[in-house]
Length: 231
Image 1 (cartoon, helix red, strand yellow):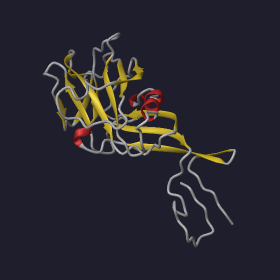
Image 2 (tube, helix red, strand yellow):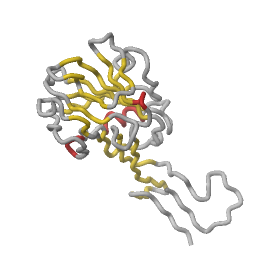
Image 3 (cartoon, helix red, strand yellow):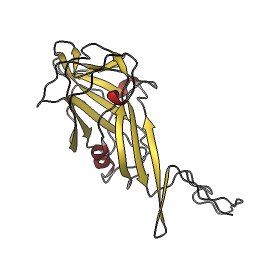
């Protein structure tokens, strides 16, 4: 007998198979979540224990732009993004009850470069898609990691990035978080930095015409199995 196994969702259209997947990746290294210090010659704070949005200090002190880089994104070209967001966890409650509104952009690069030099967050070409994170809920309970610490849906940004001609599975993408100039923040939302399970985690649900880990393997000639699997 032949068994077809898929993760989450299976669709058959004319002999084509489309499978649904969830991709999830946190910050994997200290230099993947950075703060570009706008009042300090745009140098990058790399390796901090937390990520403050959009100020380092209360009282609107030391404004900064946040860069989040996710290497090895396992989403094939041609995929359709169903939902996408970043899940944060509260590190500190400083400024957590004062109003904060942010904007989120993507880096319009098919394989986003690492962070490093000054301006290496803000000098990137932005996606046309931009998401407003307006009136971010208060962050007052250290350790909380739930809906109030999750961004709005980022589907349009992620779709625009993976639709680029040179996008390939395994490439890197970057998200950029900054203060909303139309609605300047008064407070701070302070999140755990990476690496680790409590870091800013990108979660993407997508469908793809490409199946993963087929059994038999691609190119197999002599096959000793009666099971056909895709996962």
